[in-house]
Length: 345
Image 1: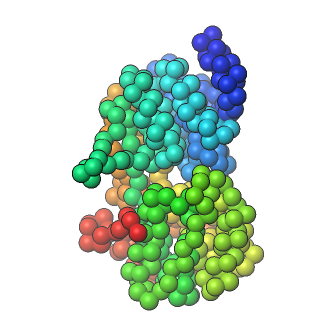
Image 2: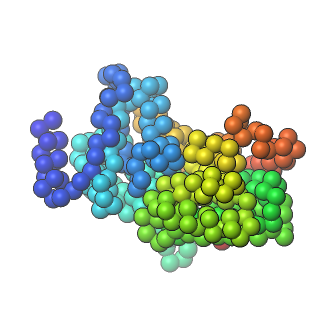
Image 3: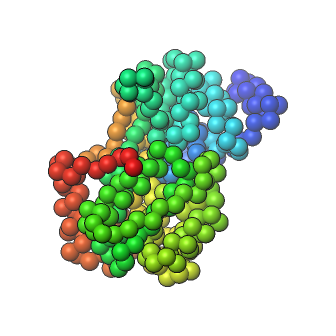
């Protein structure tokens, strides 16, 4: 405890501002054998109804089912990410998780400094050498990757089949390769069922703030709706809250991302492309508990239930049975390798 207080004091002196969202063991008393897990959240923090909340669901499940002791840190500023990770590593957590591709460089550097600490990076960005070969992460880092393009392909096909327009929309957050995967899959799904459809694409910005700008999201969405789009798929974090507001205002539809976002605009959310961040986080914590954790690349796609789309009592009336049947066939064909889904523009 003394060491922790010293570290916190040092960080405060250095003007580092972050928030301990849920201290270790706050949810319920953990078993003595439970693992100590530290998670640093992405921009937007808890309550984004998307990316960060997904990581939190995996953490809560691990607390309940595995007896894990989880501490969540929400950075106050973008520059605080490395400080949060360093604090958890210095406390010798059994696993330190960074939620978001923005953590890649910090995790890579800290993994080299703390070689006995396990790290995991959600959407960890892999780099390549001069010959184009993928450079693996450090041996104590698990790179958690998702086939967002597969889930996006399905919601793209859905948007084209039920949108009632030859124009469909896509709004991304930060204009980066990760979000291009969402766009590429969505565009391919639209074209698969409607070759002559047009996909309008816009991004909110080129910095991490593009994921937390609802005003910009609403502005872009209204622009697309005015051009004849009836359905917009967003992959923009909290910026998507503005897309939902525009859908409510115009009486049109939006497609959520990462988690089920129906509650953001009941009656106006056609579906959500869900990303199993909770599945991946829980998987890593379970591996740590069972002493089977090892560094490397872990990929979660349709076959691993790592991505998918929502179809339940809330949106079933919006999706005809024939459309749902075709989506399920498309899903099976993707898993079987009969449909190749692009992951780049």
